[in-house]
Amino acid sequence: MRKYFHQKNWILGVIGAASALLYYVLLYETPRTQFLQLWGLFLGLFAGYFWWIFQVKKMGNSLLAGVLIAGITFRLLALFALPELSDDYFRFIWDGRLLAHGVNPFAQKPLAISPASYLELGLSPELFNHLNSPNYFTIYPPVCQGVFWVAAQLSPQSIYGAVVVMKSFFFMAELGSMFLIYQLLKLLNLPSYNLAFYALNPLVIVEFVGNLHFEAFMVFFLLLSLLWLLKGKWAWATVPFALAVCSKLVPLIFLPLLIRRLGWGKSIAFGGMVGGICVLAFLPILDLATIVHLADSTSLYFQSFEFNASIYYALREIGIALTGYNQIAVIGKGLAIATVISILVFVFSEKRPKLETLAGGMLWALMIYFALATTVHPWYICSMVAICGFTNYRFPLIWSLLLPLTYATYLTSAYTELLWLVVLEYSILGAFIWYELQKLKTSFPSRPLF
Image (cartoon, rainbow, N blue to C red; front, side, top):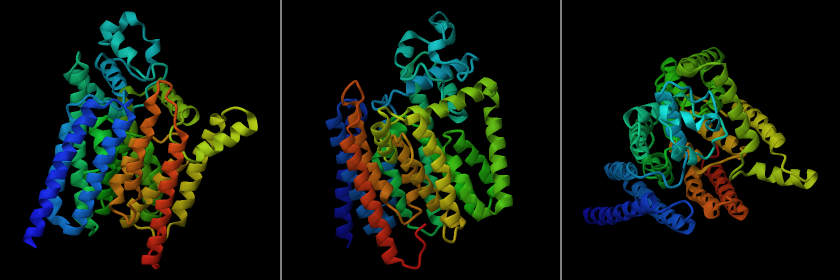
């Protein structure tokens, strides 16, 4: 038996070293236009990832230290790389420099700022030319803006320096998330090795510390809120929940899940406290223009942007066939309403809802949200990877493997999606979800699926 463990540890060590090399090439040497290289590297990383998971499930918590060391090492590798798969960080630096000079980044679009004032605001034509949305108001809420401001203060002139400062915050958030997942697994009497699902997931590592997507902060604060809810500290849980909302607005869809778990009174109080904390977080930059511009950007997101959608793409084709042009403005608004209604229907049809199953409710609320969304970027799904270890479902892990296919969009400067890849992605995902539902229904006929 000892020889068996030594042999497996040796193999896992080789896989870990090979993965580190693949991460280096992916993070430092692979622009998103090099799709075949990118996809090949992701395939290699996911092969190692699923091997690790298979071995961890067989060998149990004896490999937990190795999981943590590997997860931390891979994130450290990402710490000093400029994001190759996203150019959003230029807007982060733009907003941060405006804040550092006392200017509200929500007040005006980058295009409206005169180049003559760039120098006094710490901006530059180079920075402006790299913005991917100069004609849109910023959409990043207070937690994001706070990180931008710190980066601008500590590195006011260097783009690379500001990126490393921001990545340091992401790295700390990821360490916190891994610690919280471990604590939650213990509290729920679930295998601690489920931590490997998140700690070693290549999409999570590349998109969070690698590409600076603020779902990393949303995940950290949601996990902390979930931990305090499970410990009966619902009032304390409002603070991290509000900070999750102030990182990304998505967690608002989870509030209805509390109604049948906390009761109407506590749920209303929870929502009210969350709202109050969000207002306090916005106060430094809160005025009528901020509210109007943030609402405008949110509305624009639902009615103008489209990427890697599922149901929406089917409805889009029907709309084009009937009217001759893209009906996204109408369909996007309709799907947003359908999302709210569908989540409410799910909430009031849950079987035996309790706080211990809240993570499962969150998982399916996210699934509803993404199924009806007009835009599903790869990093959106990382939040599902974070919580699936508290449930019986593993389909987010399969989805995380499929999502790098969406980077095929950047093969050309026209950013044209290959719809057959989108169909392939959702066909495999749908088949796996169906398989899991049937398997759980057969294995645990008395256990509620939702």
